[in-house]
Image (tube, rainbow, N blue to C red; front, side, top):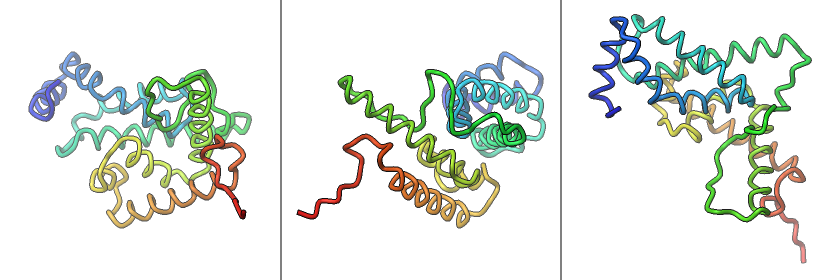
Length: 202
C-alpha cells in the first residue's frame, strides 16, 4: 500500500463496508500492532489474540474515525485492548506477567548482523532482561516508551495515542526510562556480562 494517498481511499472504501479494503489496511499495520501488543503483554499468543481483537474493533468503529493519523487511532485501540487483557490477567493471579510464554518471547529488537552463538545468547538474555524490566513499569510509562523507542512515533503522535499533553508524554518517557535503567542496574546479574556496570577500583 502506498502511504497516505491510498490509505485515505482505502479508509473511505472500508467505511462503506468494503472488507477487502480494510484487509489491505490490516496487512499494512499488522506488524506494528502486533509488536505493540507483544511489548505491552509479553506473551506472543496473547499479543496475537489482542491484535486481532483490536482490528475487529477498529473495523466496527470506523465510523468514529474523524481523520488525522489512522495509525495513532489504531494504536490507541490496540493499547486499550492490551490494557483490557492486562486487567483480566491481574484479576487472575495464577497468570504471571513476569513469565512470558513461548519460544518467540522478545522485547526490543537487537540488531542481528550474523551474530555468533555466544552473541545470540547474550542478545536473548538482554531481550529477556528488558522484557522483565518493562513488565514492572506502570502501564502508562510502558506504553509511552514502547510507542517511542520500539514503534518510532514522535511525541505528538504518542500524545494522540495516549490522549494526553506533550508534557505528559515527555514526563512518562523520562520517568519510564529512569525506572528501566534503575531496574536493570539493580538486577545487573541478569544482564549479559558486557552490559553489566563495572566497579574497577584498581
